[in-house]
Image 1 (cartoon, rainbow, N blue to C red):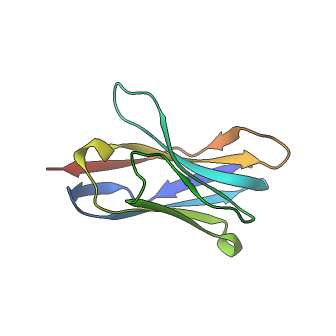
Image 2 (cartoon, rainbow, N blue to C red; image 1 turned 135 degrees about the vertical axis):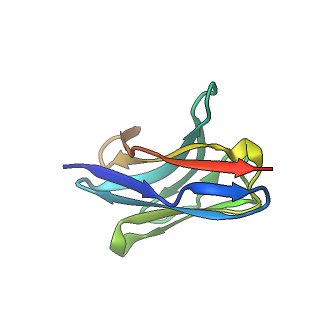
Image 3 (cartoon, rainbow, N blue to C red; image 1 turned 120 degrees about the vertical axis):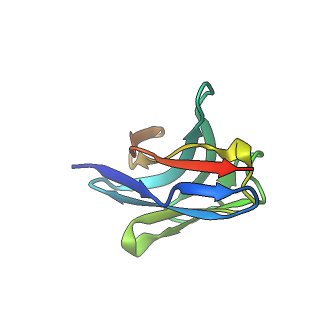
Length: 117
């Protein structure tokens, strides 16, 4: 059974920090990403990292503030979010690209991040 489970969301004041975690199981993933979706807005891809090397990728909207990292031994992916802004408020999902494919096949249920003024 494939599972991607996020945790770490919550309510934080603008300028604060949160760290999201995602544990992946049940498949061999070659790439993991973080996406977010705010009410009334399209889903936005904010960061990605490959399991086996390569540089992380970030959307311009989060570059310099968010950091994606991984722990291969624990099958964990993290999103460290600093200098949070109210516009970062969204449900954040992790997703995985299964080995042998080239698109995000599996998604977590999401964790809410709310940034207040």
